[in-house]
Amino acid sequence: MFSPLCYHNGTDRDANIIVQPVSYIFQQVMNDQQGQRCGVVCIVGRPSTGKSTLMNTLLGEKVAIVSPVPQTTRYQVRGVLTEKRGQIVFLDTPGIYLSRNKLGRHMLSDIDSAIEGADVIIHLVDACERLGREEGMIIEKLSGRKTPVILAMNKVDRKAAYMDGYIKEWEKALGKPATETEDRFVLMPVSGMTGINTDKLVDVLFGLLPEAPLLYPPEVLTDFPQKLAIADIIREKFFLLLKDEVPHSLAVYVEETAQRRGKVMFISAVVLVERDSQKSIVIGKGGSVLKKAGETARVELETLLDKKVFLQMHVKVRAGWQDDPYILKDLGY
Image (spheres, rainbow, N blue to C red):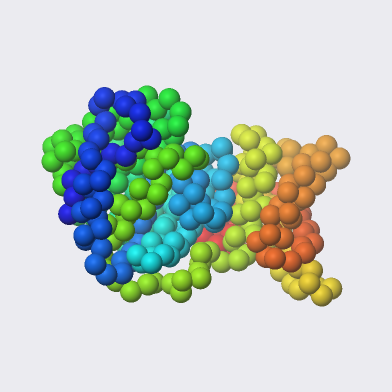
């Protein structure tokens, strides 16, 4: 189809990056797009590489929650991009990390199933950070597959000093230079935050996807269940407020949603933590943290649901909830 490429924001920032003529590449992409194309694109990477931010930018809408805290995403979140060329179903997966609890094992199992069902895989890396141990796990999972892989090197709007390291690790696994991998492996610097090369990424994805009918009606943006979406929005607000104090031990599930008093949506949510000390932090002095999280979540929920929201939250301590199958089921895992 077309050779490995790397898109650039117009400056020659790294001589080790492969850059090919954009006009030639996209003429080939357009020649390949005779019919409507559709398929599943799985975004994988270790925590905090910017997977959710990239997907939201590609969709032009917020579908997945975003925070600077690692392991923010715990579910497979589908985002659907539909245009005249066809449809791309993005799968934003949890960050791959080494974990021994049931929650971590469940998320790794979800990632494996997402990879199995993908037509194209985006391996998203943080080009500002050195390779981690998880990178070896990810490359081992992907390098032996026939599924096309895009190595998307994120955060090139910053000092992306480690792009060459990721390329060399992939070339080592493939056993050949990236220039010889044809349409099996594609290099692309991007910025999910500023949008650098994201339009070109979409072009390349449509060039790699098969001709197929749409999987979702054109008006669908996501198939993420409403209760899980509500819980994720609430959880995001605590993550943003608490940073590294509690988040990995915090979960949210929605007990009830009901239409009340005309156009007002009543939502009852439970915030789970593992220890009494964490409960105190989540509530905050005089209830300040709980109140702030509730206020910011309510504003976003009213936009999402297009109606007034009355949000009621309770904080409960459940030691070891990340290994409790009944609680994990309530949380949607």
